[in-house]
Length: 193
Image (tube, rainbow, N blue to C red; front, side):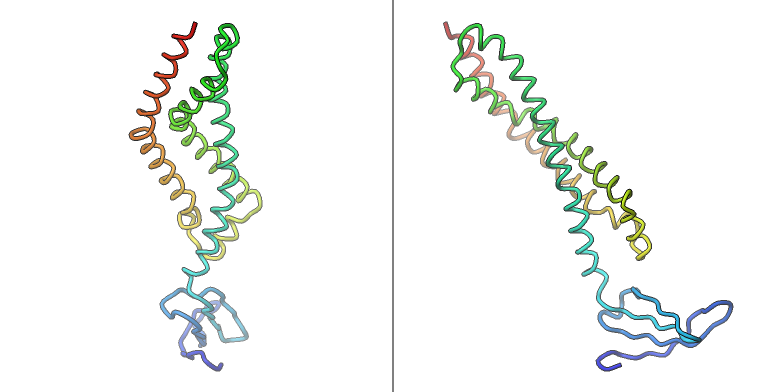
């Protein structure tokens, strides 16, 4: 074929060894992606580098992970902030606390709660995404294309590492100062007549 290097080699076919033609159209160091077996000759075609095709699969797995991750994180965050609001609600209504101060107390509570919400969101998002990929046989399709399972799920692992790092950063840098601010708002609320 024009533009492609042509190499003659031998490939195992059935019980014996048959001559084959390798059509190299891209990086010759990559494994063949499509194996055509035509009447006594095996033709192995290398279309594009595997890395380029994996970037597309990585983006697909990441987008499948992103929606459940955001929904799970928002749900857990609302539940935990709602728990704090519920503890303030009785006193706010009984003592007539200003709404702006209560909202400020809840705002300063977000980093503290986010430390707990991020790992749960990662667990919910990854389990839902992997479950959906498995239910639609997309993991099987990636495996049949020759992609190892650990490589197919690399975006899930990387997002877990990112969320763990983000949670650690929030716990070490943001949450202590937010907790001090929340305590000062709580002291202000206690001092109201």
